[in-house]
Length: 129
Image 1: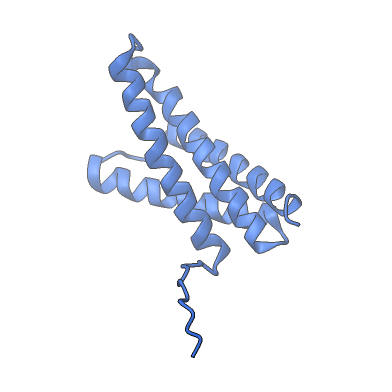
Image 2 (image 1 turned 90 degrees about the vertical axis):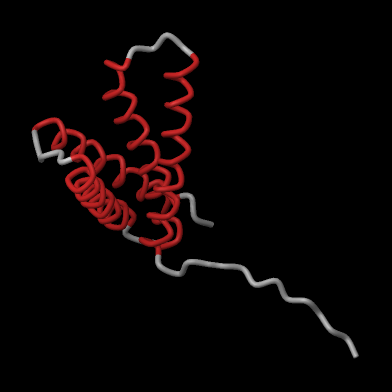
């Protein structure tokens, strides 16, 4: 009798859900690294807005890349849709937790995230084998 142990692997079938998981994971890692940079260096908190934009852009780019790679087609669509979900999630968390209103700075950040998401999705589709 030959028994084989099958290891179950969790595979997210939805490209948007997997991209959102990757984007949020990268956001947590980026937030921790930003906190360490602020703690261990003489970086001022006034540069926090630019560091936040960089962390969000990079994490959404990686998430959109994964989403486009898993989708296999229409990378700009999947990356842009992921960016919209990500921005709505940021807006809801910011409003509920910190009472932050929608302003010009957040609209500028959302436009940057939309372009980073679309670009990440396009590159993700083109890196698929």
